[in-house]
Image (cartoon, rainbow, N blue to C red; front, side):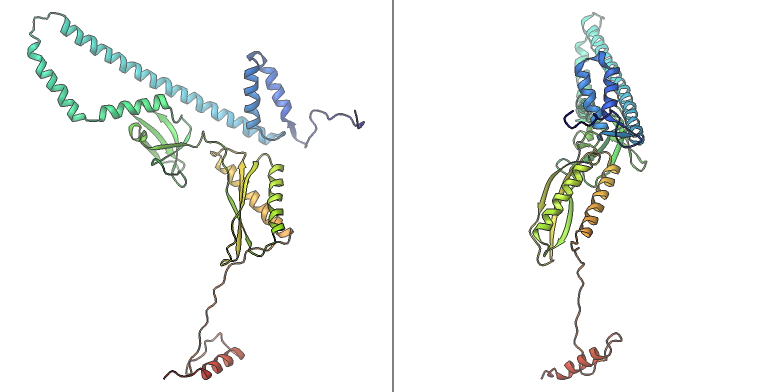
Length: 348
């Protein structure tokens, strides 16, 4: 009203798109009976799935497919968890049956002298305990690991590594089935592996599916003679580009300028933007990284900034008095080399 311009219509935006606010409002109207708390969770979830203010048909289709895939994984995980609980229930029923059987044997007078059976039964239990060793404990600990800790669900991408080591460069697995004793996984190229739960319990399990948005580290090398104002402008332009692409990046978390390497003649600028994609979507991460690198390259060209030139090795050799110049050394260079060889004193 202050400027006299008409208010914006809910729907204005690029052609072929729909405002994210309208989609959120529709979802809130459809689920208003579930309360305000559920509505706040719904808004947060939709904003994470649809980061752009205007949603195209392709973005909407990808988000629906992602939600549908996640729902299938959740249903499979619940079915697997129910199956595990069923196995545990059956195991507890067997334990109680054995306890009642032993109680019936020892409490009811069967006309048998039980004192004669104490030593054989005790010897049998001790023999089994010595033969099995730590296997019962490890097996029970592995069962508790998958039931109580629940480090992964069906459909999650995980990395199994030694404790204290990073998961960079390690093989990634997709969880296909979770059992009481083992977990069946597949590699990204289709190989099937079986991980024993009591062994996995001692390792470090990195759940890529549950990991947060990563910070991408990207380095830009500039000649050491680059003016400081151009370096500052490069960082500021990258910050503006990240702010203008919310579908790929959240913010520029940090930027570092390393000390110049005068021997190599370069200065290295480290950029650390926070990605808007989850770590599990490595395809989208690489696409966003490529677009950022292309933007930096194009900006450096348009701003007239110099690029780091590869170092070229120079080999020099002196010809002796009777040496023949190489074929590529002709003309004045050959004459100068021969003159310098003739003028060089002969060692005594």
